[in-house]
Image 1 (cartoon, rainbow, N blue to C red):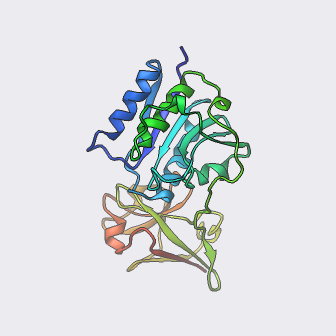
Image 2: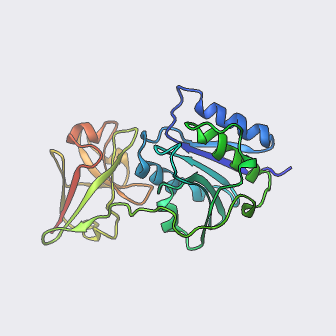
Length: 263
């Protein structure tokens, strides 16, 4: 029996039975599978947060891992369930753009509309495709069923462009806060390439009510209560506070404007 990894990325949280039921379906189909939670704390209904979460994590898993990504405000509507082969990984998700950043990162992408309903849990609930369609299909994939058994390829799959940093006035770059993480750090959409002038040069970053002039190489370099900039592990500029919340200190949240001015 095949023993592939299966990951779960959802907005279901941990207080309800949803994730547990999905795991039950997976193990019932393939008891040899290894099921791993990437995160079940994606912001509710937030496709961009789901897209960021899976894009930051999937490539660290072994070849042929099956990633189940369920952020699905359109469950029960005409939106399609899809099976994506991207690089050396599989993704099972609703066709609503939640895999957009995966599409950007991989050169080889094949998308199939999942129509082979005999692989589903019957009857299919109108409100829980995560259990009855996505987990079931992932279980069969993890057991070695070939992707072409689940449906035909499509080209009109849904994708969106994540917001990107843009030039502002002279020597300025304007971005936004994409996410506030569990520690209160403000993760922006600004990459090192957007603001190369801050490395070794003078700069200021305005976000919320804070003006940041320090670039740290690790979190411990920050003084108590000080908001500083740091290059985060996901490749974006972050604003953080040592053992504190930059979101609270700066009065900023997801969507807040971030303006970098370089000398």
